[in-house]
Image 1: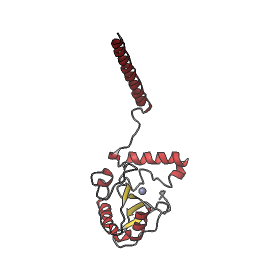
Image 2: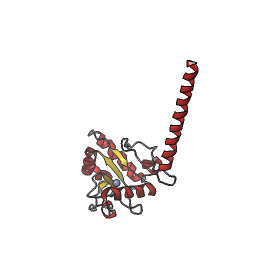
Image 3: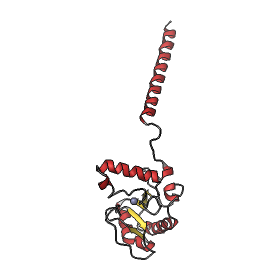
Image 4: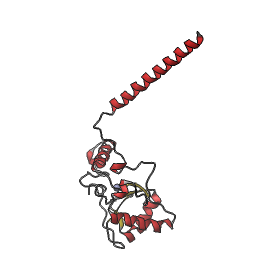
Length: 184
Ligand SMILES: [Zn+2]
């Protein structure tokens, strides 16, 4: 008799667990309706905790970079490595959808489109969307590229973004005067 009761209790527990699981999964579906854009690796999204290296050639953020920029980065990285510096790439090529999303996020963060535009360009103007810009993490690497980058044509192009680099001159040339911010 007790054995039967035990089985009944177990079955009830299983049914309740299933019901709760189904309820929560339909809730999760309900709060993220179809049509909301969720950026993925295919949009060039790089996870914040796993930046790329210059050799990570399976990721669209690097694959879709301007080949001259990627080549410059790889050559510069070889030289930087001798100084113990590694370039952590936190952003490269981005899809139009990803850029639009970043701008929308920045508008929320900064409270106005005007302020957001100082840091995030529109899809129409962003050099990330055309594959002509990378963002490099870690201050060490940023300072290294600011000092030596122009040997490979790499320049910091926005005065307020010490992490953002483009191939903005010929190797060994002078970097152009920096723009004030992402408004251009
Ligand atoms: Zn950038």
